[in-house]
Length: 238
Image 1 (cartoon, rainbow, N blue to C red):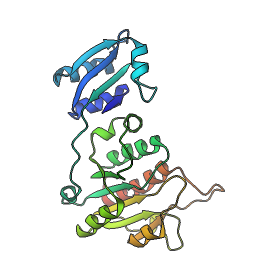
Image 2: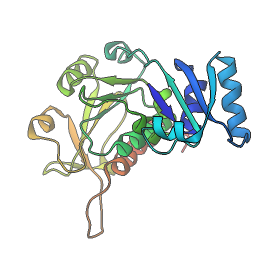
Image 3: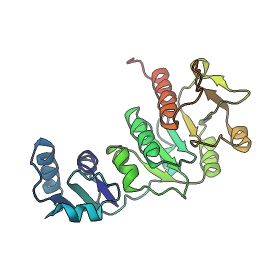
Image 4: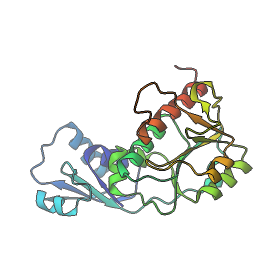
């Protein structure tokens, strides 16, 4: 596991992630955020190394390390069946994505709305780029890798409603749909719709109403709109 950037590293330390080594740029300005990172690293007995910038540049996978980089062991993946026993679970399945920053952005929003877990297909690795784009949210929410149809099977057994985001013939306007938990939300990719096989597995599909000429949204933006509608319908604080 490699985490880069001030906020992602700090959140990983706060979450108790298995960080073994913290690399700090030698001449880095010790502002409040850096002091917090050092304090958390000391609290968790993390080895700290001061290195020259060019070494961080060489190790970096994102190119945006901000003078801070951490290495450690991957978190043990939680069991989906166990998580589905949670009170009113809200599961997000990211079917596919071409751009890692979109996955990170969805994870960030999912953590903000209090989702139970994120599921990724087995082929998608939780990279440093995804962790960076999530701004530390990836360290606070369970992330599971499992095939879609196995996840749907387990969700059905736990009585979750299966909802797809798709502009399809029989889709329901998002703001007319009942989106109360427990539910699993399936998000498609940037350039591919959810297949008929997947749509047939959904209880309903929802579409976001639009008035412009473009008639499409970035996948992480669309996912955020739907997740916050679930949040609005489920919570009374708005």
